Image 1 (cartoon, rainbow, N blue to C red):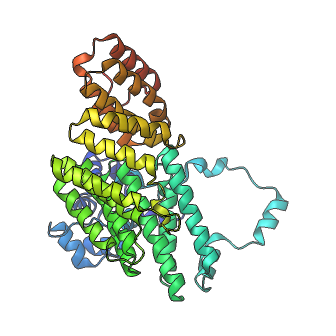
Image 2: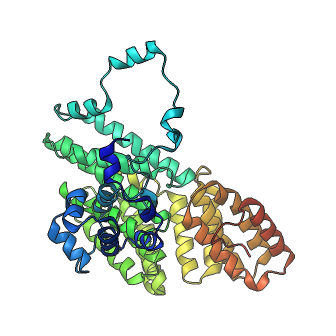
Length: 446
């Protein structure tokens, strides 16, 4: 590490200061700026320069007149003030010493002379970065297909394992693609890049949503909306708004959920080429919003609309790739969940059970929380043995995926089971729960 890099870092003691830790956890940048001013001698003008902000903006933040929520700004502050990524809920920053290289310089083995002479003939990474600025990146339709292929791989791995481990790669690729948008290109390629960037931003938001980190999720969803709007991609805007609607149901904000899904439908309906599958998915999200509000008639109407649109699907339809997941088993399980949200357990149970039998076994997260939903509808009907058996079977896929949403569904079932804890089947479920999901801080274990 160079002396220049060292000079930019905060005092080590400040990074372990409880006041600083609390401010970072809450992303209270007014407090962070005040702390670094008082305890590290970094004054507002220096903060502004390091973090690529204007002095007036820093002053407004410190005075409490402005908040900093956009992820790009949060990342610039982390990098500019050398606040480790984990303190602000970010991925590990590039300037942080990689864990695999965490040894003293004196312990690094010396390269053989032959290797050093070979490496000396190659430019260093800084040179590569400088030269990259002088060349225009060549992009064509094949490049866009390659980006799309990587996005589809992210979708698959997210379903199988959760998005926590994927997030750094998704965010890194998003930053790269956003950088490419600064160059002028033919409209078809540029619009394709905007589409790629919008989906990467939505995916980043989705991984935060799945982790129940809702503020970060909304920041990325908002960025996705802005990117989609640049190319007037109304269907992608509708999909992002539908994700925001679903998040609002998890946050117990049904009015927000309904507002977002209504906006999504407004975006999708005027768009040329909006397919029945997209409209069906949006109607089902509307049903979730109404069900959270407890409005039975509106929920049933939206469910009917979802099924009516789905029946209109033709093999010749050209669906956006992001809606391919919304197949018949997904329509059925979502229908069951909407009925379950209304307390109509007897109607919900056979629908959810049928969908689980038919859905993709590789989708660990979907299998887990759909099974917990099934268990809850069974418990609502007094079917304690069946509910505990269903929940026990759900523990295997739940333990295979890193998803706070799945943990939340498990916690809801566990809380609902409380009056029956002394039943033999409930005791057996708890024993299996302890075996597969060892207790951690804040866990659901007794």
